[in-house]
Image 1 (cartoon, rainbow, N blue to C red):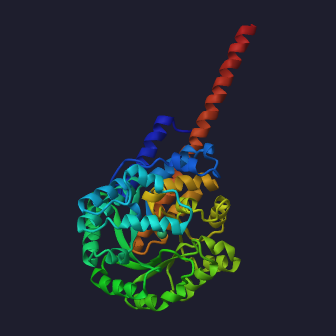
Image 2: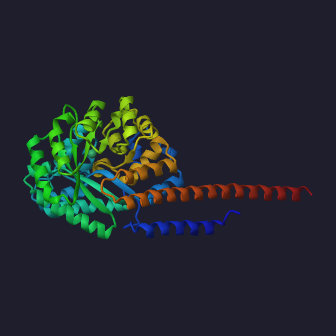
Image 3: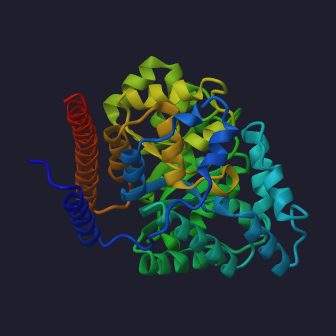
Length: 421
Ligand SMILES: [Zn+2]
């Protein structure tokens, strides 16, 4: 016999509490802080009115998640940018918060990067980096992120006259406080900028050595076109010899050839974006065989017009191809959504069900660089259990509804018989 709705609700509550206690990993109870609806409305290709089934929405809100592709500088909200500019005596890049938001209407990656680096110029002190990172951790915790591997671009700040240690002191203090306040585990990925001289990347790598305990990997970002990964082979070889994991932004706007180079010459453990692997079936097969993860960023791709006009189909293809795909927010302050918002948008854009969403969430833990094996397994199990619980609840609700309908029909039938007699 199907339990009564009140009994089922208390069972669901128990499952959820067990998950919380087992993983003691939730710092905040608030939900996604951005207005996903406004993002959805900007994307005319997505049928926003289709909405998300309640069960899927619940799963996205509740599921513990890992985020592997987020740039701390990309979480600089305009309010914070104005505040830092004022206290550091730097002219703000925009006359107002409204003007900043109005400028975030990008034609492509190059256009975005110009705006992005202008924003980075306000970051000067240890307190700036601390407050910036803490604000991201707060938003991430609201998306139920319990593990995050956060990228930063030291060359940008070094070229603005900021010491490497100033950056790291702020970021590491924030990581320690976030672990305490939000029960979120944090490691950092030091990204090299492919548009800056190679010697500056070499310098950053040397300066990073005393911070090895917090920097788990090196990455490669900034404008991709005309800057092939092979130009960075010796730098990545040195990073590998020093024990750093490796990742690289490739195949965001660049060709599959760049993805091949990242795999074969930079020997990357993960690919950031990598969506253009779809243009080479041999590459898709190789990625499937090697299980090298791709950190995709759906709303970033939409805002930067990657595969413009075909993005929904391409993301669907990527997810249904069986590749090890993870979902991430990239530069949330500029693109308008943190992690839960990306899952919600993707769910509508490609029509995910709870099971498919759970696979993506589990992939985030599988692909993490700095999770101990036991915790990785526990989190994958937790995600599976939560998906099963949400699906069971959905099935029971469907039975309730049809039972209620049958009851209503039989009572109206009885009324009809009474009237006839
Ligand atoms: Zn990125």
